[in-house]
Image 1: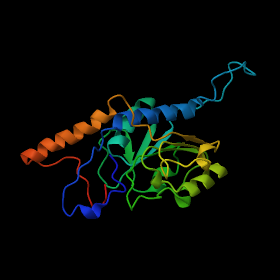
Image 2 (image 1 turned 45 degrees about the horizontal axis):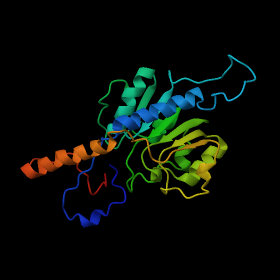
Image 3 (image 1 turned 135 degrees about the vertical axis):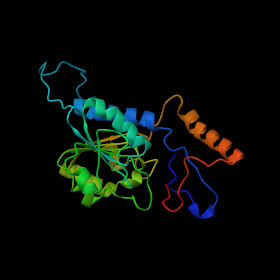
Image 4 (image 1 turned 135 degrees about the horizontal axis):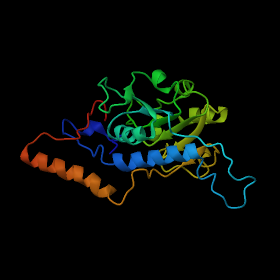
Length: 241
C-alpha cells in the first residue's frame, strides 16, 4: 500500500498503481480500539489481585474529545466514520483543499490549526519527502499538555528523538505506535521500555482477509490494463504517493 522507498527513477513513464485504501477498515478499527484503551485505561485497570478500593476510578471518555487526523484519504475517512458515533469532535488536514466528504468533519489548512486543542492525534498520511519528520520539536510544541499520539502510517513521519523529548516533558502523554523507524526496531531501543509508549509490530492492517483485499486491487487494475481502461489507485511519481 505504501510506496515510500520505491526507486521511482526506474519507472521512466511506466504507470505504477498500489492497493490504496484496502486496509482502511481494519486499521480504523484498530485506531478506535487504542483510543478507547487510552480513555478507559486498559489494560491498566484489569485486576490480578484485590484493589485498594472498589467503585473508584478516574477514567476518560471519547465523548466530546478532539480528534485530529493528519491525512484524510481512505484510512483517515474510515477512522472519522467510526469516531463520529462516539461524539468525537473531528478535524482533518490533507494536502488538497477539497471539502470534507464526511459531514461533521472540519477541514483545516495547517498543523497549528489542527493540533492546538487535540486530545488524540492520529497520523494517517503517506511518507514522502514532503512529510518525513513532519512531527518534530516544532509541531510537538503546538500540542496541549498530555495529548495522545497514534501512528498507523509510517515511522518516518515522526522524528523519534523529538518524540522522546515530548514524552519526557509530558507534552505527549501517550504514544501508541504501530509504525516506527526503522522496522524492525532493534533490540534495546528506548521505545520498547518507555512507560508512555505502547508499541506494536505494524499489525493494525491485519484481518483474515487482508492479503486477499490487497490482491483484489491488483486484479481489478490488471483487468483495466488488459482492456485499455484507465487505471485506478495510480501513484504520482513526483509526489511519491
